[in-house]
Image: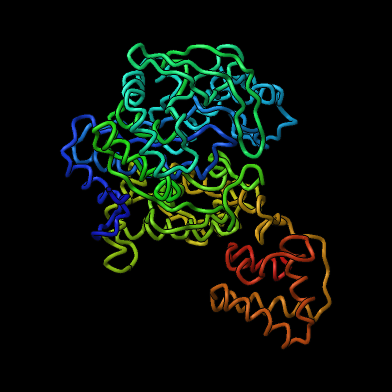
Length: 543
C-alpha cells in the first residue's frame, strides 16, 4: 500500500518540487494528468480552493521542467442530492439562504443526480452545472486554469462504461474487498447505483446483473441520507451502465483509470478513508497503478471549520475584495502538511508575511538561508511576472489611507511617509494605491481599529490653554524625534501627565482633531502612519 505523499521524506525549498519528483520517478506518459475533485453540495467556498491550488503549483513546476500537463478537476455531479443545503451562492459569489431562491427546485428533487436537479437560481442548466460554474470562476479569479470535468458527462458519453462493466464482472471480488473497509456490505451488494427510469432517483437496489450486455435490473427503494429517508417509488426496471453511477469508493479509482491520473492531492479525511480502499481497488480489481497521492491539512476560517450551514464560509470573490490574488496564492503556497487558520481579522499579518517573502526574493531584506531559498524557489510561482520595481504599501498603512477617499491625499501621505518612492511613475503609484481599497474593505468588514474616517478639514473644536499647550508639545516631539509608533504612544501619556491633563481627555482631544470622534484606534500608531506635516499642522491647530 502506498502511503499518501506528505513531503516528509526529503527537504525541499518548495513542497511542489517534492511532488513533481515523485511523479517523474514513474516516467509518466504525456500529458501528465493532475486531478482534483469535489461533490456539488452546499457552497463552493474558499476552503475548496485547497485542492485546486495544491494541484496547480505541482502542475506549474512540471511545466517549468518541460512537461505537458493536463490539470483536471472533476465534479461528482452524478451523486444524488441527499439533503437541502442551508446556504447557496449565486454566480457572483453572493451567499444566500434557501428562502431567497426557488427552494422547491431542490426539495422536490431529493435523491436525483445533481445534474438532474433544476438550478434554483434559474441561470444554469442544472444545480450541478451551477456549482461547477462557480468552481471554474473561483479558479479563474486566482489565475488558475483548470479543466472542469463532469462525472455525469463521463457516464453519459460512455467513458465510464468499460471500467464499470469490468467491476460488475468482478462484483463478487469487489464485494469481498469492500467488506474490509465498509461494514454495511452484504451478499446483495453490487457496485452500481442505477437511476430509476420512473422517478429519476438514484437507487442502491440491484436485483440482477448482465455484465456482458452492460445492463442491470433494479428496484427503486428508499435511500437513507443524513438521518432522513428519501422514498423510492418502487418501480422495477432495467438500466444500462450509462444510466447510473458507481459508488464513490469505486468511482474514484475509475476516474484515475479513464482520465489517466498521475497525481492527486486530497485532504487527510480521504487519506484515512477512501484512499486505502481506492488504492486497493485500483491494484487488485483494475490492475492499475494508482496516482501519486499527496495529503494536505485542512485550514480553518476564523478558528472554526468551514461550514455553509453554520454560515462560516467565505467565497473567493469575497477574499479578493480584501487581498491581492498574489497574497492568496502565497497562502496556498505554504507547507500543505501544516494546519492553518485563515483569520480575516488578522489578514494584515498574512500580507506582512507576503511582503517580506517578496522582499526576500529580491534580496531586499535579511532572512535565514532556508527562508531565502524558499522565497527564491516559490515566489515565481506565486507572482507570474516578478517586478523588482513594484511598490507595496504596508497593509495597515493602506488601511489608514483608506480613512480618506481623497486619492491625492492618499498619494501625498504615502509619498511623505516614504512608502511611494519619489521617482515612482503613474503606473507604479496606481498599482501601489490599489491595495488601499482592499485594506479599507478589510477595516469595514472587521470593524477594526482602522474603520474610521479621517477629518480632512480641521473639526470645529476648542480646547483649554493647558490642552492646547500639551498638543503643541506633542507636535514639537514628533518634529524633533520622528518617533516610531510605540515611542509616540508612550510620549502621548507622558505629555498628558506632565501638563496635568487627564490621559483619557488628551486622547479624546486627538481623536476629535483627526477623526471628529470621541474614540478611535491606538493614537500613537495612528498618528505615526499619517503624513507628518499634516499631523504637525493639526496638533498646532493651524489651517
